[in-house]
Length: 113
Length: 114
Image (cartoon, rainbow over all chains, first blue to last red; front, side):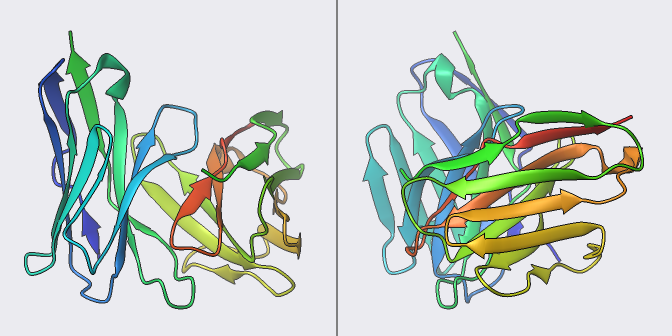
């Protein structure tokens, strides 16, 4: 049962344009969502997060949008830079009781010069 | 963000031997740490949840006698792969909770069993 899904295994975007990575979830109990960036043979790096009481959180070039009714979140990166090329994972959790993170399958983002 | 250090970053061992991987939270105390395994081109698979001072909680299908987890202090958790076999070769990653909602990850350990 895949509770967190990233349906696009890969995405290619031109440098300077906007990158939009999508994530869907099925468990309505999730109340905290996170995005991580991962390079090969390295641990994931935390990027940005959002609580279920919000619908938007922005940090520099990164913005996460949450649509609770659709159980959908997205990560916007603008402008995209070559260094953004990596695998991006969305994750969700239930905060109470320090519940485990549930990860999506990841989306490989490639930024083309 | 919070710093989580994982050691070693890469290890090669002979089949049948045991390997210990350490995960340390450097600038915070972590009551809960998580151990993951990542197969090539796959997502992170949670192996177990490690709570300081108590037994780890293993995910379904993970052999607790093979993957021994110890969380003896608020800043250190260890994963020992016992009697390693080539199929145990993988990328192992730990993460630690800061007490807030976010979790931070170690650099990962590439284990190769020959």
